[in-house]
Amino acid sequence: MISFCQFGAGRIGQIHAGNIALNPKARLKTVVDVNPQAARALAERYGAAVGDPATALADPGIDAVLIASSTDTHAALVEAAARAKKPVLCEKPLDLDRKRAQACLDIAAKAGIPLMLGFNRRFDPNFSKLHKQLRDGRIGRLEMLAITSRDPGPPPLDYVKVSGGLFRDMMIHDFDMARWLLGEEPVQVMAAASSLVDSAIGGVGDVDTAIVTLKTAAGTLCQIANSRRATYGYDQRIEALGSKGMLRANNVLESTLEFAGEAGVVSEKPLHFFLERYAAAYRLELDHFIEAVEQKKPPMVGGADGVRALVLAEAALESSRTGRAVGV
Image (cartoon, rainbow, N blue to C red; front, side, top):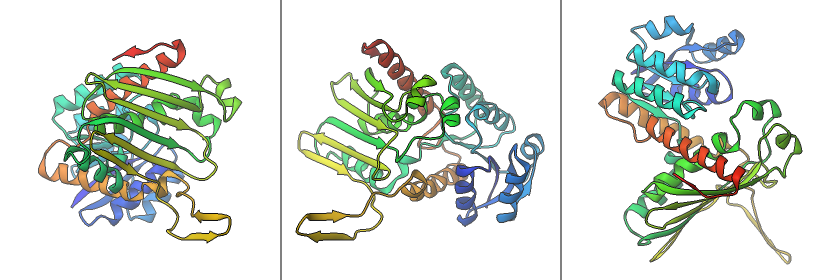
């Protein structure tokens, strides 16, 4: 039984806490949050205690730490947990600054703890099956990869202001997926971006619509398309074209129900938001982390993957501002 201390009792923290409570190999022992009421409500729901960072990390009864607090707290909490020799599962990103993220990663490596980053999409059953068939050579040599990720609507402006921007916040997941599926590192990034959904987003220096093209040393191409607006739901698709065929992972729909009539065939909408769409991925992500802790082995997606995805995000931001391809 792995006893967790969880930092963060907000929206994503509630998902993680629920998954810990449902996992037969885990229990939520302590909840820490800057909002005492939120921490207390979450702790009471799952029979946990409310704690403070120093006391929780010093507790010998805590086996692992899950960080689901605000982004600006991630690096410091990872470092504190590493010094306390506690394995860490941290929501992305480690930090918005690449040098700070790398420094955090170095401390975790020196401490010798398992550090897993929350790129949960790798654990989505559809995407992981696509990845396996790519590696098994079902479509031969991969030549083109297309990743579509569109939110049903933009986040609140207060969130946008502190998010680090679309490339570091939203597309960071897609950069990780691209690296994972391509099987090699991109060496060139070309990006174009606009503010088309909400002019207020552009007013605070961010974008809400972007297309990025990645190129590897072997010449394989990957296109990532992001938008903060998809009126039909949460749009999450991947298509891989190879020398022997194509693999496609389509949207997960609300149901398999279809209506057929004279005007055509109408299916259900995609699931509305990421908490629904990736519910299974979050559960499988936790399973993998617990296995890594139990077996004292590196997790499939570590802090270095977070730093590399951040490198691509920074290159995309530079390319979108300059209009030039950026070497990585």
